[in-house]
Image (tube, rainbow, N blue to C red; front, side):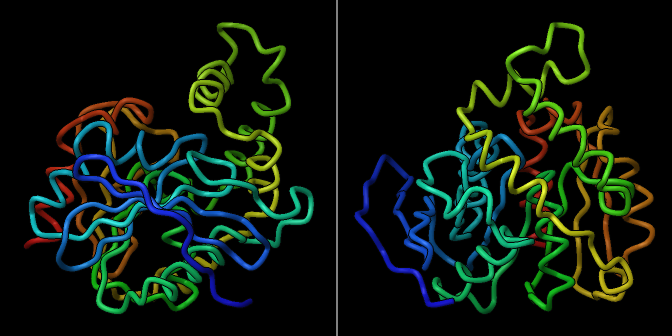
Length: 262
């Protein structure tokens, strides 16, 4: 694929957002804050950079610690526009997009992290040879990487049932979150359907230092301590919260700063 190009820039206090055009005319919104060494952060499914990284102060803490924080919105999420062909997205297009973004931004000595689907995408990138200085897997456990099929189908069902699901159904919260953030359900379904399994042998051979950080009551992606134990060089940090609430905890940003500045 060819390289993306810049669109117009718009600035709000302490946060700059610009659109990056991709070869299939997808326009990725990339938010940035701070200056210094680069840190690329990937948000979770049905979310966006604003929800995961900006709203609760994590990006501001990281910027104050001396990092240039880059926060893209995935296809169909946040302020990104268009997606390419909704039903013809390439397998692992999220990882393809981030590799192209890394090239476009000229990132070499940088850190990489993500929450939930962003963590899974981070893990995928590590297996594809992306070599950050350090990596963060937030809201992720062992089964979330090895048993993705169950989680994948859960969210596909949530999308398919979004207009009929009732309160009390296991999919209710996911559907409400999807509606609140305004995610494009057609694109999100295509992304989920195209996310190929992770090569765990390759992941377990990666020697990049990793922070595994997860809510105390978050078992949505399985055991975070088990994931930590299996990685070559990983540190586990437990913070308050469930999968949905842990991103609102100041401890998430604190643990990220501590890990990246140690």
